[in-house]
Length: 110
Length: 120
Image (cartoon, rainbow over all chains, first blue to last red):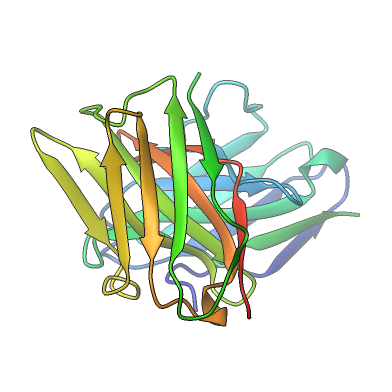
């Protein structure tokens, strides 16, 4: 059972905007910054969003993040077939003194 | 560009010790701004943080409560690498293990992953 909660699946058609949500608690999302990762099959997770809404170099601006209270969201606009992947949220948990993750959302591009 | 190269056996017998090493290039294990983590991923447990080591005037470690009694993470500044040892493994420890850098609070660089299977 993951500490952060994500819906197991999401889908959209090419060009659509899709939002993936993540909920936590005061000790993790409520107090610390949020990260999002994209994982393609057979590869390591790749940092997509850090510090709630910042994109590492090379990540398209189609990807955006936001946080409010103990919840956070990842939005993908202009959906493309190569966006089909698993997406994970993560945050530091000050009570557990460790990183906690969501269970992942599998995004399907129809 | 930071790169993390993992090595270690892919098969460990039950009750034995799992040992993995992560060689760092493009950064230093002794960096004042980074921490060096081990994270594993399995279908049953998802992504699970195991622990970390970092240097802030002295070496520090932190471990997840779920594995605290069984794991050790050690830095090796002479080889610019860090390692994971997990003892008394069971089939539930079967997972892909990743070494990961956290920098200014972000898990930014990941190793390639090592599938470790615990089986007799």
